[in-house]
Image (cartoon, rainbow, N blue to C red; front, side, top):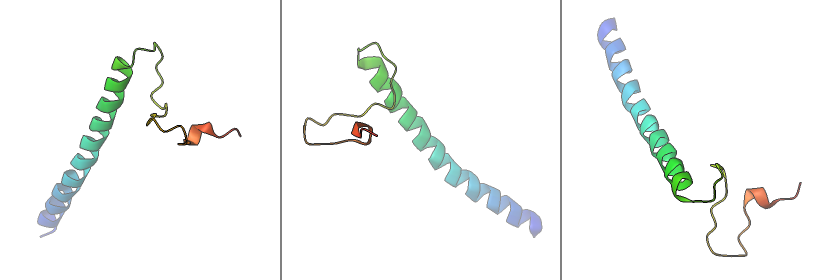
Length: 64
């Protein structure tokens, strides 16, 4: 019985972790695509996205 419980726990953990890995891979792919197509010659994956609204203030706009 202990073997079955261990196997079930490992199966459930691998299912939940595969979702995390899929999300991380999708995020990395989106950042890579953005950096490859932006054409400014800088690698700045943490830059802010501009939504066209000049009143929008991002977290990097603070002058601390």
